[in-house]
Length: 377
Image (cartoon, rainbow, N blue to C red; front, side, top):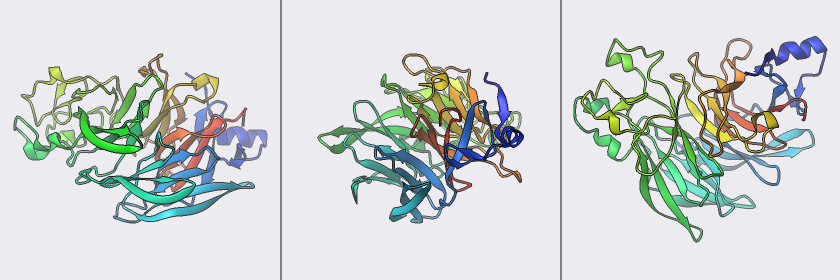
């Protein structure tokens, strides 16, 4: 474990300016030698983030949970400040943001995905057939090393309570899974179901080896179905290594092949176990392999915990093996992320930034942040 230090206390004691890489500095508890700077605190519920080769930053602003209030926003550095330009407005709860193999930027709205050329922004919808309904309508996506597109189709319910006691959850045939779309000749074509039993895959990351890791946001209110179970500690959220055709348990099983109380007779032995059990309600909404990071964490899998319960509001890094498989011995890069006055941090997307940094969006506080080493910035 790395030693801990309150950055705000440290700087006050040394009489240093409250900056981080030339940005206004947040007073947070970070791993020693690291700091967090504010790129912008004037965004409207920011979710996905993406850095471009020319140094510009793109952010999707969801605008809240009402339809058609979102925007795709460019931040461009001018002198010592970042200037905001909203390229597209009126988007329907945009969330996912990814750079495609064609050099175009892909944006996920509810039920659909469009792409555009950053040099000449014009929307082109390439997918329009996502369910986009129920409890988890947001679109998240990632391109694999072959250029194919993997898209989250979140569950419509919490844990398919409407089919409690039945042998099969009808909803799980079309939701709570990941679709794989083929990308060939500059076109996104037909899709197949790549993996099932994934309640809501809001965090997806691809390792250079080709390995795809998923962050599972597990069910809520398990104690409402079985009062003997503790909702504060069960079920665990998860990190899963994706494999074609595998079933990861939802809604029938949780944790390491334990039957959900709604489906006590389901054969959980044939489901895929999680690679890492995360704290319950950590709510991983974004993650990335920090391939360009400083030596201490280079190549590690960095995950943002969005949750408002005690296990959430922090940034966590997992060491990985040569294939990118994460271990269960994480380090907290930002610990117990609480602002003065008690307001919680709410990290969403995490992506590599310039100069070995990480870009982080915080939707609850309207922020785009930059995390990195205070020694090298």
